[in-house]
Length: 358
Image 1 (cartoon, helix red, strand yellow):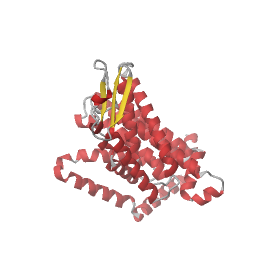
Image 2 (image 1 turned 135 degrees about the horizontal axis):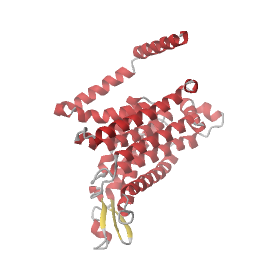
Image 3 (image 1 turned 45 degrees about the horizontal axis):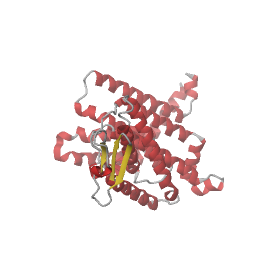
Image 4 (image 1 turned 120 degrees about the vertical axis):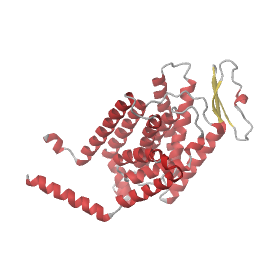
């Protein structure tokens, strides 16, 4: 007990986050195995995990680094399509579905990390609104590229083409008639994908994302990133390389988004690039803001609740999105009420004094 009391507050919060996610996984798995979850809830388990990872990774950029990124869905798109290509091209070579899923997520993370590095070189030298505009443009460019991508595979390997003119089809790739098959059909996206994503894989990815992000934030590099966020000039004056640490956070965030995209794409038989548009980036940003900037546990809770909420309100039919918007506004007012924060601070101080008196 003494060791537990001597732990830092941040360490306790981190462990509480891990334990909370593990307990949630155990409870949901028990309900799932007992057949107590509806079909719609079962279908949302993997996407919830993916959006939790997206929110946690974006919080690293927006909340921890203090930079506004509006193109996070672009990294998810890179991971989704590169993961699909990896998994589908290996399905006749590797029979184990879990192994193919792991490879797909690793490939998705690597390609997204490379994209994050390439984009980050010019982007991270910008600040404020300029950075947000450029990342927004990146997300739209990636979506357009994926809309033009035509990919197939046969015994000779992968065959790719960019359908810029709008005239290229899967037949133009010259695939072998016996062993060839289509993976991505341009604007139609990835079709006929074998669904191999599981809730267990989603839970593992969430834990990996939490461990990576929380350990980075609590490390020396994380303290440097926080210093840059709080006062860039002061950080530069003590020798902190601003671009290097911002790039570290940006690439890590992109890699986690890519892994989430790969898992998300392997949960559906059809996936179009239009799914990863500007609205998706804004949706994830809403999760981050409502969960609290810099609060990783808040991103986990907000992503879970706000993803399930529209489905829970489906019985209201045409009014469900109106109710959803009202709930968002009320949550924002509730969490940003200074009187409410003062009340909680006084309540917390009162409890601490009571414990010290005991």
